[in-house]
Length: 109
Length: 112
Image (cartoon, rainbow over all chains, first blue to last red):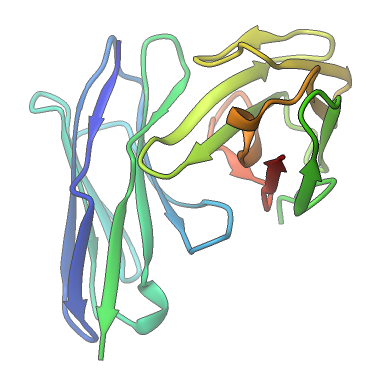
């Protein structure tokens, strides 16, 4: 089976840095994805990690530790438009994606 | 840009009706997926397909069937809609490698 855990909600101030954590337990591991989903819209792809370490993409970075079953998404210089749900998804040994329930980030002025 | 489209954004159906949800992608992706998303439960995989005329059950296939007659089109069928199938339905597609999934805009289905 697969289990993906994310905190449900966090609030942060515009301009700040926020870290969104994801822990997982899966049968096999073939990569971890982060998606952003605005209310009422479809998820959009943010990042992909398959090896340990940090992947940086502009204001967004994603980190993976396979031995700890842990990833985080780092959002820097927060903007109001970053208010969204952030979904962690793991591709297990069966090559299917298992999604976490999402972490709702609320950005306040 | 990858484009995944779904036939309807909003749909209202009655219990017992047959419902067709269509998904089309224009990137020649091999893989296509149907999910439903419910508050507190996250995204759950209903069915997926790795090739034309191929289909595999996901985690919650009961009450659903699918059809993939052409590579670009993947249909989800609710043979006899029930109120517990009220949900947001999301279609996604991907290449084999990398297997990043791209999502359509979603169909919000209400079954009365």
